Length: 136
Image (cartoon, rainbow, N blue to C red):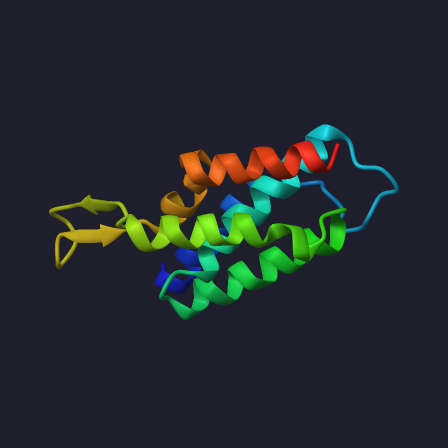
């Protein structure tokens, strides 16, 4: 199985769990609190991908963030604090690494794990909580 297939599969799994497999990408009149939380968390995760160095993940993060904005009630202007917190997180923390004797170089970075955990960082969580309070 090729690396690109694995990357696509992992990214699709992450995105489908963050977005909800059956979630439509359309705006509703008034989102529920759960939908708002999901959208804010998804936007944070998507933003994380845009700050990575791998072009494929950066492109997917941009598309993911755009899809979240299209279906949500979030306004881009109110996301500045969240984006800044995610950017700081990505600059200050190393990507997790798995070590394996089966890999040629023995190390493999885990950017999907890294970005899925961005929503648990203290500063990012503070910005998520602010957005949640302002959007309910």
